[in-house]
Image (cartoon, rainbow, N blue to C red):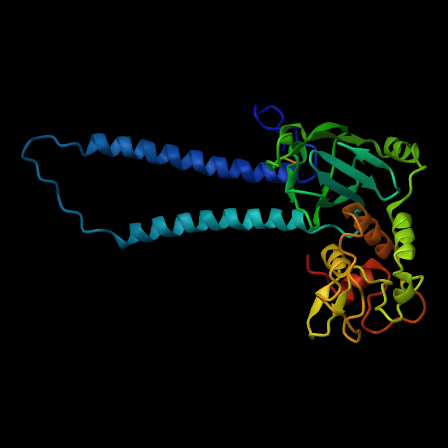
Length: 335
Ligand code: CUA
């Protein structure tokens, strides 16, 4: 749907912007239709059934089951259609496609720090290619912020100590507003930036233009070695005194309390900062905490490194195969 001709509607530049707009028009349409209908009928009845003489006594009304049913069932169907349509768009937005490119976002008072998986960093700017699926993994260093790109119809809270993921696919090259949409202190209104959508070839040039920076996975590997993780989890994450990390990301993990969890960003962070919280089945509480020793950005680097670890050699029956498709079939990740 082309919506740029309507005032007050931001430009539409992502695959789900038209879907969100269509739902919005439906909601507005239903609202306007019933507002008009009720107003007109109200005025009509006020005139038609006005009191014509001082002594007029109206005919008593006994009620109608047919009418009662009609005006219960029709609004129910309309409300459920809104729910079903909204839920469908919500699921589409909140389930990240497997093949999305990952970009890390760290918010702090009052800026957006962005790092691409190749190591390229930027502040208050996000360069993305058109027509490719992008997954943002976002966290905050201090208070709650909110990543809002009106042209993409995308908005998500960015929280300290948690990882929010959002995905989008830009459909049109250009520069779009990025706002912080959560009041986060004195310079909240200045916490703005731009999303620059480029042609894929331009983007690849831009990305390789500053290749001197270290990729997060490489920085994560150095941390893994310098913090001594390597002595229990193995040089390639193959495990030993600690559980194996190879192929861990996205897999189901069995815990000592006989529960299972999915190894997502939140789980990995918790296991680094508070290792005793979710002990992997078969392992004792021997890992020290690294709380306060790794910054939010370093945590992201560790995650990038852990994600890069692939399963090699014979695989245990409970682990996912390295291919994302096979992994999705055997052990689905609820997301
Ligand atoms: Cu960050 Cu408002």
